[in-house]
Length: 109
Image (cartoon, rainbow, N blue to C red; front, side, top):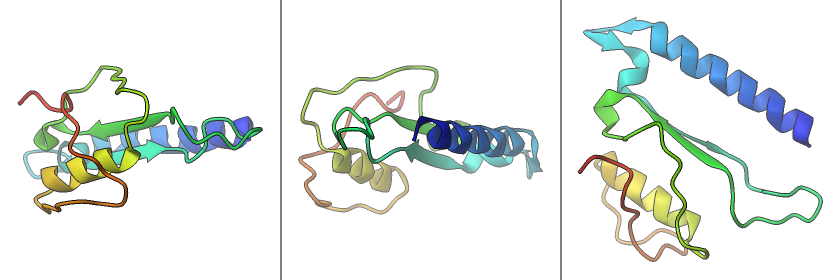
């Protein structure tokens, strides 16, 4: 499983790099793109689905403050991230799945 995940991540890194160098309008394609990348299982041997490795990659127009590792309290639902992203994309939603609220610290605001 590790080798498969590594291959997928290499392909994802290639896509992000390509978008960061492809001109679009007054910037690059990545400037107006937001990716959520991760896996649904943190340990494939035990099918452990907590403490998931998730990457949020966005260009400057997305408002994401990059270059950081953020750890949220144990038990924070992943749906909170999805709810926060929907808000950022202008699609407000009161609840999503098992969400308990929005995440802070993703942007400079």
